Length: 223
Image (cartoon, rainbow, N blue to C red; front, side, top):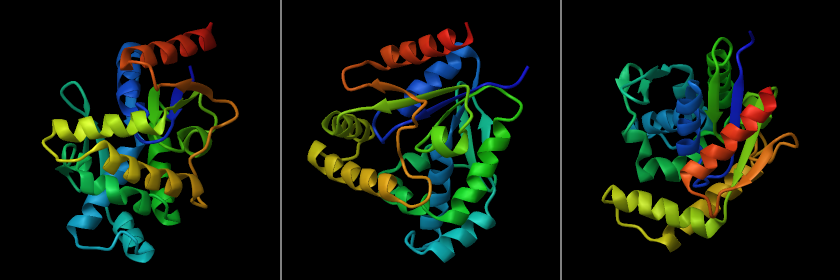
């Protein structure tokens, strides 16, 4: 039987990661966070003192880096050159620079090929910002999670505050607006709603409700 892919797109703060994790757990699929790969590369770029706006330098780092996703205790872990960076890639400085790193052609070629290989022989739930349109254009089910900017800003602010990082809704709204512009206007693999995707507005939904809707769509698709 051919492996099935559930691809989930949407802007930052729409609930992609948590929803995808929960759906994967319920269905027994592998959870693939495509954005974590770009975050991991961004971390290495910053740690090496490289300007994330330098396409040539960032591309060189991508060519020589080994990025892996491995099963962990209850969740996947992400490694760069053998080092576990799962927690480090959620730092606010990664949020502020990952959109620059992820827009470069060479970077996307390398990581998209890696992501596709992961989905060749196993059922996966993949999430990111171009999973339905570029990475897995023939996914069995395509989902686009939408959400009001202010609600996304609130979620991000609470997330960082929970980690002890001082921030505000206004600050996060400004940063998310910038990321939205970069992600949606980039020439290569921009964030957009695939015409085949089921759109779910998560503004007033809990994570459980979001996962319920995705699982329902999947079950209806195989029946």
